Each structure stands twice: as C-alpha cells, then as structure tokens.
Length: 370
Length: 250
Image (cartoon, rainbow over all chains, first blue to last red; front, side, top):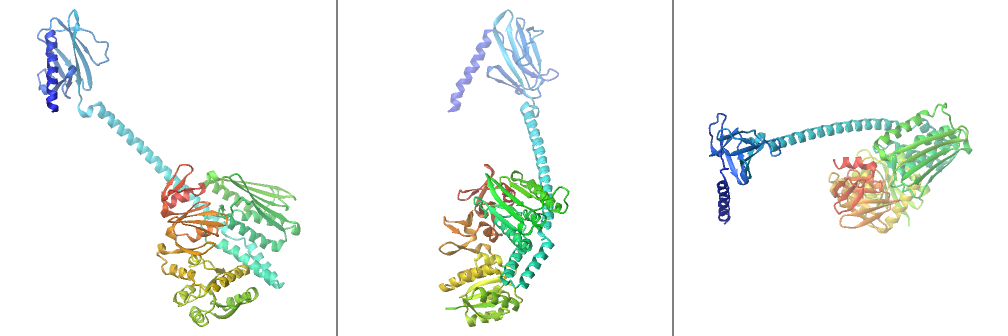
C-alpha cells in the first residue's frame, strides 16, 4: 500500500529535474574521482531531492561536467555561510571540487548575463564515522562525564575517609573522657562511707539504711557499663540529688533543685554526668566551709527550644588565681567542646561567674535541645 | 489473714538482714522458712506453698532462674533480690516482675511487698513468671519474646516484633501495636528503651522509640524523619541523626 503510494511521487521528482534541465543546459553530470582524477564508483555519491549530494567518506574530489560550458559561470561557496565567493568562468569543460570531509559546500551555476536561471547543489562531504562531529562530541561528552565522575568519586572518598578519621578521633576522646568521669572521686566515696559509719554508731538505723542505699544507687549508676552518651534528664537529676544528699550529711548545707514543669524530664536527654563535676565544685569550693549557711540552687528551665541550667552557690567563690578547682572546670569545658563538635546545631553554651565571698553562678544553655 | 513468705539466698547474712527489714517494715508478712541453695529452695516452696518468694538470682550451682525452671508450681508471687543488674535482669524487667537491689532500699521493699500481697489475694496464675520462663527458655529466638505492658486495667504480654513504636509523654509511654491497638503504660520511655535493647528499636527522638522492622525509609527533607510502613512520619532529632543512619546501615 505504502509502496504504491510512493512510486508516483518519485516519478514526479524525476520529471521536475528533467524539466529543469530543459530550461538551459545547466545540469551537469556529477562524478566522484580519486586523487589521479580517475572515475570511481558512482555508488560513492547519493543524490537526494533539493539537489543535495551526499558524498561518502574517503572521496576526495568530485567533478561537474557540462555539455557546453562557454555560456556558464559558477560559484563555489566553501560553506553555506561563505560570503567571499565570487562567480567564475570555466576553463575546460569540467569543474573539479576538492572536498574536505565534514564540510558542506554550495555550488551554483548560471548562464552568463542571464541571472534569473540558477541551479544550485549542496555537497555534503561525509566523514568516516569516527571523524564525524556527532561522534567526536559524544567522545568528548563521555570523557567529560568520566572526568567529572572520577573527581566526584575521589572527592567523596576523601570526605568519607576524613569522616571516618574524625569519628575515630571523636570516639577516642569520648572514651578518654568517659574513663575520667566513670571514676567516682575517692574522697567522696570514703567520706560517704565514713558518714554512714557515723550514723550506725549513733544508732540511727533508719538513717544508716537510707544513706547506704542512696550511696549504692550512686555507685550503681557510675559502675553501669553504659556506653550511651546521653542519659535521661530524670536519671541525671536522681544522681545529683543523691550526691547532694550524701554530701549534705557531711556539710549540712541547704540545697534546692527546681525544674520547670514544661520540661519533660523523662523524654529530654542530656550528656551523661556532665553536671556532676560542677555540683562537686559548688560543694567543695563553694559552701563546704559555710556549714548551715551554705546554699546551692540548681535551676532547670526552658526558653523556647533551649534548655537552661543555672547552678548557684553562696560560697566563697574564686578568682582566676585560686587553685584547686581548675581540673574539674577544665574537664567540663573540654567535654563541652567535644560535644559541640558532634552536635553542631545543638551546641552547649557554658559560662561561669564568680565573685569572692558572694558566690558562684554556672550557666549552661543547651541550644535547640528541647 | 497472714501472708507467708520464704527467702532463698546463698548468704545467711543476707537472709537475716532481709528478715529483719521485713519484720520491721512489713509486719503483715510471716517468714515461714529460708534456704541457702536452689535445691533446698525448691523443696521449701513445694512443702510450704508460700504466698511470696524472695529469690536471689546469683547462687552457686543452680541459680534462681534454674530453680524456677524446674519448679512444678508457679502459684506464688515472686520478688527477685539481686546485687547487681547482671545477666537475666532484662528478662525480669521484660516480664514486669519486681526485683530489689542490694543493699535493700526500705521504701522499695515496702512497695514491692504491698504489690505482691495485693496480687496474691487475687489467686491468679502467675503469668509474669510464665512469661519470664518462656523468655529464658527461648533466649535466642527473640521473635517469640513478649514484653509485659501494664496499663490501668490489665497486664498484656505483647510480642516485641508486633510493637511498631513507642511515644513518650512525661511519665507515660504509649505503645502502638501492629493492627492498630494502643496501650498506655505508666513508665517513662527510657526504661523501655533499655529493656528493648537488642530487639531492633531506635530512639530516634526524645519522645520516640521506633521498631526498625516497621521503618520504610529515612526521609532527609524537613529536618529528617522516618517514614513507617503505615505511613506515619516520626521526626529524627539532630542529635540522633548519626545514630539513626548507623542503625539503618546508611
């Protein structure tokens, strides 16, 4: 069906060309030739409609031959956009056109002094497939892609390695710090035991029972081989309370832990044992000499998404020159710096303010914590 | 009516100490016997059929769990007494069985005894004990383990693989069970996080504990959240991102 339909169309094109040829002798025979101008197979060129001639790769020359060239002039454009070309007369009966592959030439013929009748051919000199523009473009694109993906891959690998290294360092530091925190201060341990002995010898059996179990709770919490970085706020509160109760047995100070109702202490988590050294400082360097007049207040409150903790004591305070409380503070600062590395957007702000003989305030702000 | 109790502990000092504390703080109990090893303990229980058994876990030879496994009757209320939260304590917590830590806190002792007395008056089969033995016997087959969830009305034993997630609000934890049921329990979420360690749960947020098997994907948009099989979106907090990624093997 399709074939039958096509056949008349082809005949029509053929007739068109014939009629054009009758107009003037402007139709040349076009033949491919080799370097020595010997004619080679006609299969090397293909005529299509609109006078486009496709020349197979490897053909370096074609010739245009007319019956009579005296009255004809020609113009060869080396590319379709070439504007420098000009009309020439024939010398001999043929026009040799040397071809460069991958180029499109335009060749025009007309009768001298009769400019209305022009024939024009487009010569498409094809290149071998590996020299074609599309192929070259594809190769360049693939190469580019290869380069980009290699760079990307190397970049990612480097980043991954860096991350692994960083994590390793972080873990290392974490374990070192943990090891330091896991130890209960021996001073505290034996003083607590001594206080309990005191209760037994005073025949305060319920008291002795109470403080003994409190002390064992504290020991249990610290001995717990918990590799978790974060603990429930509730657990930390319990530890602080127990610690303060035991120290209270020795120093008879007052203490108060206030927590904002808005804070869900069973859900919120904070870094394990972060507050303990700060409380220890408040007792040891703050109010231990004040006895009944000593007061420690620990306040937990929220502002927006932030958790704030203020530890206040009315003790002797310290100046920069005071020695003794340096280590605990330094450890805390180091630990916070380390934590801030791992939770960048949820960092902890830490500040301490102390005036001699009026007291010390430690301020912790856990940004974006709630 | 007096409630009867026996104490099984490998150290006589511990038995004496607990007996003194019980006499002082829980006078409604009558201690009718004690034993310093599991074999004697077993005989004691069969002979005296006490209402409450105080049982040490760690004992030389047969330990407390072994004794319970070989025991033919489970018609008593059980309170474990242990020095440290070692092996097996997870199973005990899982079954919501009371346990006391040494040295004994008198408040905790009073509370545990009160609960045991209340339950023994109901004369019910001790399902918690049966659940404990079930878990201990099939220790490796974690899929079969059931966790005791005590709501206001009853104690349910739910397979951990059927728990989709837990959500915290203050002292309460709500369990979302496969099939649509919800159970609200008056225990904080961190206790369940601890109990469910090793069962494939991720604490991805302060208020959320999620079963890995119900996670469809980790979505990185909107600060990151977990998309569950049932379409629920659970937020991942910034602090937990690394942990979640590690847990999901990304």
